[in-house]
Every structure is written in C-alpha cells, then in structure tokens.
Image (cartoon, rainbow over all chains, first blue to last red; front, side):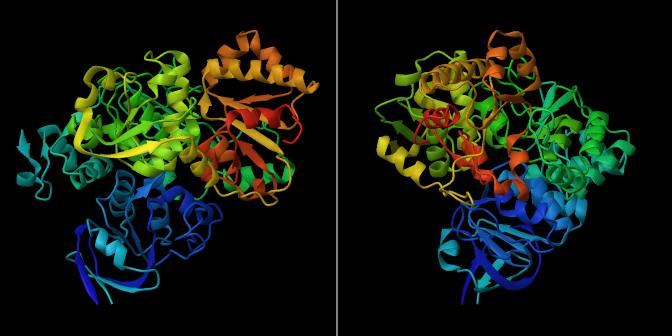
Length: 146
Length: 438
C-alpha cells in the first residue's frame, strides 16, 4: 500500500481499478472510436498507445502523465462526461495540460459532472501504479494504491 | 481593480469590475458560466489576470457536426438564445464532407448524413449566429494570406486547432496557448484570455535544445514527429535547420514550418518552437530563449529512420496497394499546390501515364483553392485526374466505413488520427504516378 498527494482540480472520493498510460494520452485518438460509434462504454482506440489500446476506460481510474494531441481534447472530455461514459478519475503525474484542464472545467461547469481530477502526483506515482491495481482517491487529493 | 476573492469568494485571480460583474450574473446566467469557465481554466495554471485578445479574429477547432457532440449543440443554443456572440469574428476548421470532389458510395453518404455528421447543417447555422467570418472561413490554415486571418507579431490570441496555434506562435510570433475547443469560443466571447504559459516571456523559453545533424534536408513531417514525441508539450529550440532552409521566412520555408509544426503538435503537444536564425523570436533573441537546464536531443538520419519505422501500419491488408491518398493535412499553401502539380506532371511523363494511378485528393483552404483555380497550374492538375477539395481529410477518413480502403498520406497528423499509412513526399509521388514497385 502506497500513498501519494496531489493537487485537487476536481475533488471527490472514489475507489476503483487503474488503467495506466505511461506516455502522454492522446485524447481524441483514445476516445474517438467509442464516441463515433455512440458506445456507452469507452474503449481506448489510440493505435499509438499500447497501454490503453483496447482497454475499457469508462468508470476506471485513468493514470497518465498528461494528455496530448488535437485541441478538440477538452470538448471530447466534456462529451464523454455528459454521456457518463468517462473515466471516474483522471490522475496526472505531471501538471495537468491545457486541453485536459479545459475538459474537466467544461464538464464541471456545463455538465455538472462528478468526474475527479488530480494532478502533480509525481513520477514515482506513475512508476508505481499498474493497470489493474485498485486505487483509492480521497477528497483532499490523497491517492492510495491498495 | 479588486480581487474576485473579496466579491465572489472563490477566485484568486485579479479581475476587473466588469469581469466581476459578469461573473456575478449581471450580464445573464449564460455569460456568467462562460466567464466562469475561462477563469477556472486560468486558475489551474496560476494565471493572475485575464488579458485582452488583441487580434480581431478567432479560430475555432470544432467544425464538424458529429451527432454525438450533444453538449456542443446545447451550449451553442444556450449562447444564441442569450444573444451572445464573439467580439469580432472567427474562422473554423475545415468541413468534414465534400461530395462533389470526394466521391462517396450511397452507403457512405447515408452514414455521413444520417449518423456521423447528422448535425452538420444545424451546427453551421449555429456557427454563423455566434460570429463565423464567412462561408470561406472553413480551414485549418486560417493564417494564410488568401484566407486573411493573419495575426501580427505580439498579438494575443485565443485560438484552438493545434497546427494553427503552433504556426501562429512560432512563425508569426503571436502569443496563444493550446486552447481547447469551447475555450476558444468562450475566450473570444469574453474578449480576454488567462495570462499564463505561451502568453508570457518565461513560458516561451525553450527547455530542449534540438540538434538537426542529418545529411540532407529532413522531411518536415518526420522531423516534426520526432521532436513532438520527444519534447511533448515543451518548447524546443532547433539548431541546424537553417543549414537547409536558410535564414529567410519565405513562402517555401513557411510551408515547411507549417507541416513541421503540425507534426510536432499532433505527435506531441508542442505549441511553440524556435528555429535558430529563422523564426522571429529566435532571430531577435537567439539563445536567450533557452533555459539554463535545457535538455538535448540529437537527430540524425538513423533517428529519423527509427521514428518512421515506429509508425504502426493499420491497413486491413498491408500487402495491398493504396486505394486513395490525401495530401493537405494541414491544408496546402498555394505554392505547395503548384509544386505538387509540377511534380505529378513530370512523374506521369516518366511513367508514361496520363492520369494519376489512384484517387488523389489535394486539400486547401477555400481562398487558396480560388486563387489556384485562377492559375495555369489548375487545369494541369485536373488534367492529371487529381481532385481538389477544402475538406478535412481527418474528418473524412475518421469513420468505420473508410477502414476498408487503404488510404495513403504524407501527413503525420492524418496518420496519427486515422488508419491512413504515412509515406514521405517522394514515396507518395511514386505511388501517385504509378511507378513500378509502389
């Protein structure tokens, strides 16, 4: 059991299964296939990211350094949140990037989403957490890998 | 000035009285949500204030009426019903469809019209109501002179579209963060953007020194890809390119940097690069732009080959030849269209063919297409059997039905977001003109 403390962007309490992207997560490439096919569950569709390709992301704890790619990223996150098909939490090891930040703010202000986002968890967090781990998130930004 | 903390109680950012009033709903509930989104976004990055946008035209990334984007249409309706428009006007990314120039089967049309882009007409109508510049405003290369949305050095922008942002910052010397869709619109409505990141002198400093040690001029799309994958969202300062490009920002170099930048932004998250002795800030400030602890990345021929070989081939049948190719992601410049015409004509003479060997679609901004149509190159390109469109190749290829085609492209951005296979320009030309073995 190991705990990490990050900065709360959008707080909440949650316990769930981790899906880990070791590289920058391309939001459009990752979410687009499920969005285009109106799937109720998001399956990672970025061919260039083997960590999340083909993995279910809905309701999971998505652990990543940052997001990358197209500037549609924020709108994509807002949309999956409005469909309630989003990962339950985004845990960033680095400072949240501008596209993911936009998506989280849009989801909170315009969709009343309960999505959780914590950043600045550090490289050690990303080095420690593995896909399939159970992760507990607290309102104050404490993240524990159980 | 007073702080929002004293009035609104929840913001640390220093806001003007007018901004505070809007936040508190004095210009309506919708406008309060718009500015709240902009302020909350800025606070995540420690912005201390909002600064005015100084260029009159915005640029939005979302041009496609994909049915699933319900929050987008709902928000647009809310803005329109509240009588809210942007200050000035805006251009927007290219349309996803062009049946006249990019033929589709009946099934594809059905899928596009009824399912995938079922909201296109409604969304374009919404765009017009909130400030779309004009019918020709659909392109990712809004900054080209034929389009006319060209900021000047030092201008503050709230653009989205990663390839346009990186071009505006790097080649034009404007100041713009990598804004997301919706934040581009909201900031243009408010007329202000949060001051952080690439809007500040410190944020424009390079944390990577990249040395280009190749034996020949590197392919822009592969070099950009290599740098994007390495530096991610950091700012690179690139040495050695001036050896191949020279020190003048002429049309040829601007086209090169357009394609290079798009690859850095889509294969990574680069919003600004400096090219030693070439881009405006590098020319003016030189190595003062480099942070003391900058990391180093050396690129030689082998590294570019390694990067190119790392691209996965997503064709259903990789042994089959390409069925279609798209050239122009980002949209081509006028000079690029003319150059491709010359190269194809010459290549067809060499192979003894009259027409291109596969469906070949060139894409450019409506304004660029109109200028090209006036040139003597236009009938020559059409005579070679190529198509010319202002479509977004990414939006066209990005659907389940196109998976059955083997689509080729020289765009690293298109490769990243679709199943299209990447070829360098020379390889692409050989395929188009039907050279043996391609």
